[in-house]
Length: 107
Image (cartoon, rainbow, N blue to C red; front, side, top):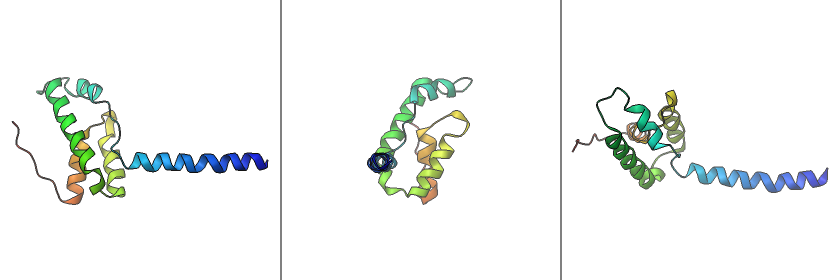
């Protein structure tokens, strides 16, 4: 029994550290899958969707530390609603929650 508690004491902190590290990075979304599903019946193309998602992911990676934990949790949930997982939606939500939303002109 004592061995069990020692093993548990070693495992729990390691798991906690992994979760803390994961919280310091944007979530991993499947861009290709999301864009294939999103463009069905839409005006945009898979290539345009993929570019938008990659651009949003890159910006999120650079700015992730600027956002609070509660905003990250809320917006990650919202960006994953309905099965679609979108970096564009996640970035927009985080920007709007902090009041730093600035729409970009389409090229």
